[in-house]
Structures are given as C-alpha cells and as structure tokens.
Length: 290
Image 1 (cartoon, rainbow, N blue to C red):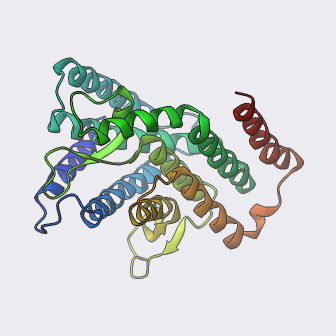
Image 2 (cartoon, rainbow, N blue to C red):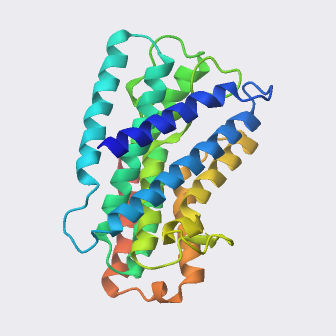
C-alpha cells in the first residue's frame, strides 16, 4: 500500500508540474499533447513496475496487487466524496483523484491479466472490448456521459462538474487554471491489462528499446504498443478536433501487433471464434433494439 501511495504522489506532483512548464502555449493542442505524452510515459513505467511485481508470484492464485488496489479504491472514494462535499473544483483534490485513478487502474489491469491463459484469447478480448466501446458510444452509457461532460466544458466549467467527470484522468497544462481532461480511466485499465497480458503470455509487448539489454527487467525493455495506441488516439483527436474512442485504437493497435508479430495467436479454437463473432453481434442487436 505504501508503494502505491508513493507512486500516486509522484504522478500527482508530475501532473501539477505540467502547469509550470516554460512554453507559452496555454490551451492549445500542443501543450495538452505534451502533457499527455509525459503522463502516459510515467503511467507506463508504473505499469511495467507492477508487471514485474506481479510476475514474482505468478504461480500463486492471489495477486500481490489486490491489497494495494483496495487501499487505493478506499482513498479514492474518500477524495471524491470530499470534493463533492466542498462544492468547488479544487485543483489539488482533482489532481489527487486522477493520480489515484491512474494507480488503481494500473493495479486492476495488471491483476486482471492473470485470467488469460492462451495467446489466442487476446483476439476475442480486443474485438469484444473495442466493439463494446463503439456500441456504448453510439447509444449506451458512454454516449450519455459524453453529452454531460461536453455540456459542462462547453459552458465554461461553471459550478461542480457532473459525477461522471471524475472518471477522466486530468492534468494541468501551461496557463490552465483548472485541470484539463486527457482520457478516461477505462482506457488506462485496458492499457494496463493488455500490456500485462502480452508479458504474461510471453509475447512481445511492443517495440524493443536498444541499449537497455543489461540489468533491466523484461517489461522495461520495450515501448509497449498498448499505451502507444492511446497516445495515437489523443493525437488524432486533437488534430481532427473530434472525439476519438481511445479504447478502439488501443485494442486495434494491440490486435494488429499480435496478429502480425505472433502467428500462433491466429489459431483460435472454435469457442474463441464463436466468442469473437457472437458477442459483437449480440451487442449490435442490443443497441439496435434499444
């Protein structure tokens, strides 16, 4: 628990320091993307460290990350209640909530990766997760939350934000008086989950980094493709000025990487093929009928 709190504090200080960066680019896409890049790099290092911790007890049915995860969730709930009780958008509380959410999402994602046993399971997982996000964005919970959040920020962030706004990871950018949202907590849960799954299944998690071959544990030796997918989604969103579902690009990046780099992952069983096709079909029918 102490390590989780230390990591959360480091991310909090990093998010706060973004507002003091030297360039004068308040509010534009460049400053936001730069802050997002630094935060993704820091959070990716956290995920890599957690993967290493979890692998030490891989044969155990109990993940060593569960206890710090519960501690982070309790503290996170307390900060959210405190923020709502104060009735003001306090910068410190907002950044603290985001830092704890990054830690909790990383812990949860890495712990969930223990459920995968075969590399072929990544295919239905990526397809179903991406399709679920698209359906939710069309006429599901994501659609409703996006409307509420968009209305709040379009109105100039007057008053307390809607409760769903607490699910966004935020940071300061140069010249910003209030924290700026970057991506959703669900996006980072999937990033951590897929990164840990690739390492757990002994697949290449991303592009190898030269010069880091000695004295460094395996998870730190690659530029992971999952956070790279999230970063790509943020770049596309800011360049196009449109909302881009980050989870779709994350899953698409990992799916393409696995299918191209690891041919053995293409040999799906009948059950996996059925799940890959059936769940998207059921979700599509559900969205259509509702």
